Length: 207
Image (cartoon, rainbow, N blue to C red; front, side):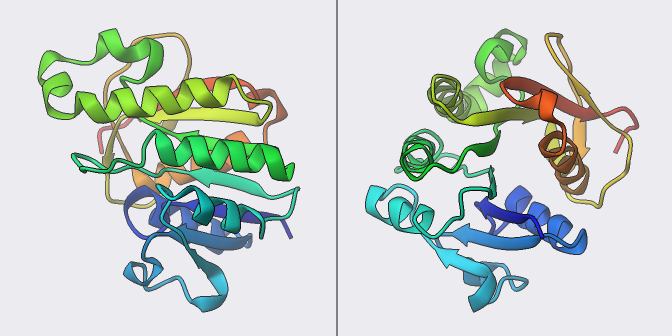
């Protein structure tokens, strides 16, 4: 059974991804600062970690088998101590040291080379978080990991719709349910050609 470790699993997209992969039959472990926020995570299926503390990240990664799929959607909007960059830097460095290769990083539309497509209002509202996530993307892209980066559009609650669309190198706008992002994450992890690539995703049907 494929092992999957999900960072940021207490709430939001991380929690939805943990739920999706559990239903699909994967061996899932959720990692979060406070796993108790996700009632689906129990003591056997969760690890406690403040990703802004390097030693805690290293301790968690030491528990991960080398053939594990690692997924991270960690983020901290308007936090005084954001995890978006530094937490991912610690995670990426720790995975390299341990020899765990496969990481799928979820960021957002507007990161990296899609920054020019972000509206002025969006830049004012959450541009700082997008810039932090862009730094994380850059750190990952210059690592030795077998990485994939996924930039979803506006996230909404909901199950997988089957109508999400992956794209590259083009301007896109729209929204997508967290359940559908989880389905696309699975699709990318099972596709060898996704290694070393950046994708964006929105739902082709209004959600």
